[in-house]
Image 1 (cartoon, rainbow, N blue to C red):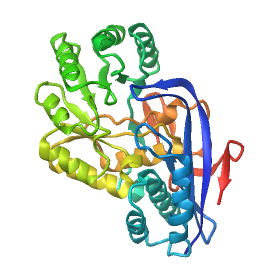
Image 2: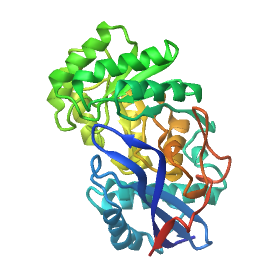
Image 3: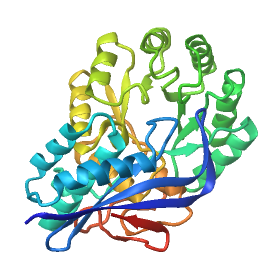
Length: 365
């Protein structure tokens, strides 16, 4: 059975609440959905989210990569030889991680559909329910405490607090959130590269001294400042989680070599797909590092793949799978859903997505 076509769909969907970090503010998910179609008419889907400030990937760039290179490369090839097709995608282009991830996931989705099993089963797992944290967008202490109270009432027990916009006020923000939700809720911080190393140590030590019971601190300094990341990790007790500092295997090897972080956040759109993501998780585990799987702001397509990876491979801490929760409406038919703080994978072939909503996307190719 061969690959008959590779199509792309531009998608933009609104968020119900603005998403604000130290790097950006957005009110929409803007992304490219890739569809790989076999000669029987079955479709597999993948996603390349546009996140200028993190990956540098754009919809136009990902679409060009898929339409001009990866699509023609795959068309007419054997759809059942999953490993060979994914290897060809990895070798075909330098960078373009989001485009490669979208095609890689679409190939995996198609393979699972052809076998009639959920993607999680193809990856070796069985569970269809995965816990997630939820993000509290950056803001002042009063707004964050109010948002934390609402999320706690909705059943979330792990809150990721976006900090790094103002180091002088971050301790007060954490204190306000802890007071609002009490001791039963886990709080983790994400500075999104927003602190200098000295600011990071000052804020984290203040949190430790205040006994605010924070679980971990994600990406406290600039992604390229591995010396600074190691300097912070060596001077605080809280676990430090590398996110933007780790895109691929070379990045993770360097973080391990420098002992720059205690944990790593693996994201499909950063590393180029499920194959590399699994290797990153295996390497981190072999080196005694903690792990989570995260996502960019993306739809049920990308989230379904990330959640399937967690369901099959597991992580040492609750993963960050709330991105599609922020959507005001789903731009696809089928796929994952949220039950409080749980991502529910569909008991259906592949990602369980039957179609993109053509009223809300523009098909290309």
